[in-house]
Image 1 (tube, rainbow, N blue to C red):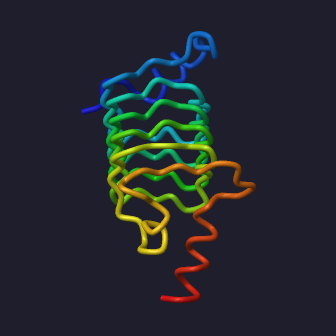
Image 2 (image 1 turned 45 degrees about the vertical axis):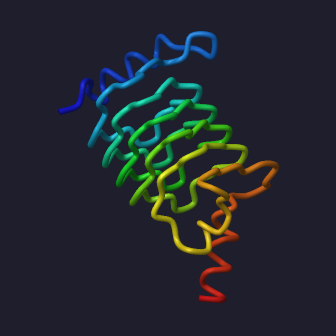
Length: 145
C-alpha cells in the first residue's frame, strides 16, 4: 500500500524547490499514477516505484539510487542527469524515455540485447546525447536481430 497519494505528492511538490527538493526517500509509491508530474531533483533513493505510472514525468536530475522501478511506466519520461545506482528497471517501459547524462552502476534491467550491449559491467553512463540512446539501440536491434 503506498505511503502517499498522487494528491499528497502534488501538495509536497508545491513546497519543494531546487534548494529543497521533494524528499521521498524509501517511500512506497507503488502503483501510483504520477504521470506528467515534475519530479526533477527529487530524492527518491530506495523508493518503491513498482508498477508506478511515470509516463511523461520529469525526473531530471532525480536521485533514484536503489529505487525499485520494476514494471514502472517511464515512457516519454525525462531522466536527464538522473542517478540510478543499484536501481531495478526490470520490466520497466522506457519507450521514448530520455536518459541522456544519466548514470548508474549495478542497475538491474531486462532491456533488449542491443541495449544491454551498451552497458559495461552493469554500469550505465549516457553522456552528451542529442536524443535518447535507446532510439539508436532499438534501431540496431530491429535492423540486425
